[in-house]
Length: 149
Ligand SMILES: [Zn+2]
Image (cartoon, rainbow, N blue to C red; front, side, top):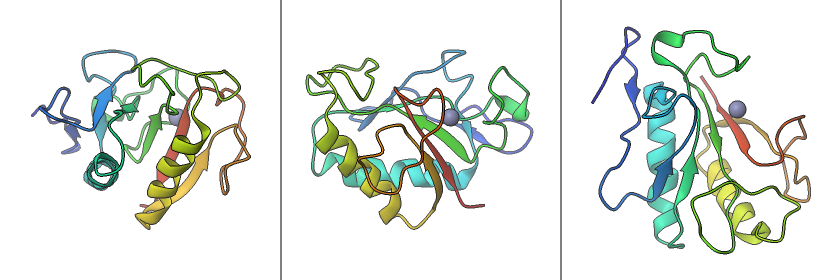
């Protein structure tokens, strides 16, 4: 498992039977270095998710190795992760919250699992029909989750 100078691990990219799939830029895990607490958060949510749904959770950018600056203003401390909303067809591709393939019910369940961990500080996502999410420009097609330090 690749590790950076902060001691942060790269999220395993294709673990067998995983309840998530990775995406993001740059690819091949280079934007997937997470604080140990964040990886714990992801695995906890994944564990609960696979018990209720066959679709995989799309896990996007976390941080670059060593917290290097990127075109992403945030995503440097390894405590933030982007997650895709669920699609009705279960395809592992993006969807915006106002498109026909967007599955509001499943996405709301996933966001509820995030809160249930007790580890979440903030969630930004533009489908504000879902409780406790905050609107932010650019968040039509992904949920930005920040966990507590
Ligand atoms: Zn983000």
